[in-house]
Amino acid sequence: MTKLELEKMAVEIRKSIVTGVHSAKSGHPGGSLSAADIFTYLYFEEMHVDPADPKNEDRDRFVLSKGHVAPGLYATLAHRGYFPVEDMKTLRHVGSYLQGHPDMKHIPGVDMSSGSLGQGLSAAVGMAMAGRLDHKDYRVYALCGDGEIQEGQIWEAAMFAGARKLDNLVVIVDNNGLQIDGNIADVCSPYPIDKKFEAFNFHVITIDGHDFDQIAAAFKEARETKGMPTAIIAKTIKGKGVSFMENQASWHGVAPNDEEYAQAMEELQKAGEALCQK
Image 1 (cartoon, rainbow, N blue to C red):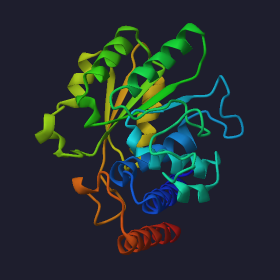
Image 2 (cartoon, helix red, strand yellow):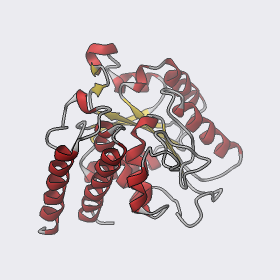
Image 3 (cartoon, helix red, strand yellow):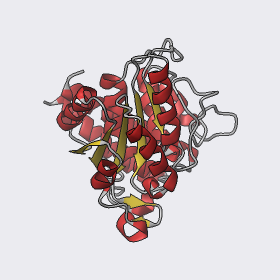
Image 4 (cartoon, one colour):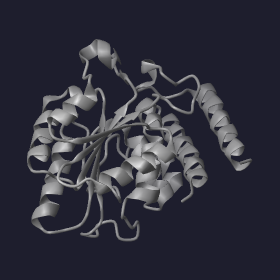
């Protein structure tokens, strides 16, 4: 896809995120919206996947370590063709397969059940190690939250990945600066994030997580990096794309009411229309 096509798709994914959380009357819009551009690039450009064959042994793998931003992953999978976009309206409803956190047993395209913060990266490292042992060429991508990396298990997994030189692993940190309790620097600062990953023998790239040129260059650099895993620190805006949600920790896990939903969708619609004028 072209950069413009990716930007347009990201807007559609954001619309589906907001729609799903509004319909559920619960969920996590802030971090889903901040990661929407990363999700878009991964599934529409970077990863070798096939919605018609979601369990192909040679596919690239993705683990959503910060599993509560499932609306972002689900919206992306839906627009990629894994299941109907309309199903986003059933998010978190009783009987729906689209649960509050990713479930690999019931949701097409989900490679790992996640939600217990800190554990997803360990699973991704295991997948990368398995690929190495099986002489497979697939790559593994894990998206972590910047609040999530306060968890100790993240660094155990990172230490193993660095020690085993797992260059088929890419960790993306959604660095939007906010977690449920406020600014990450005030809660339990993980900074400097780049130096920490470097200390665990990672190749580190820092980017604007909303700039598709920078996103593309980072993943290209990661593919070309041999002998060590890569960590992409993506600077993002929590709630990106919806004015009243942007940079507000209060929108970490709150659903918009009907009036807020209408305003959010109007803003996203205008953003999409502006892209169509380019």
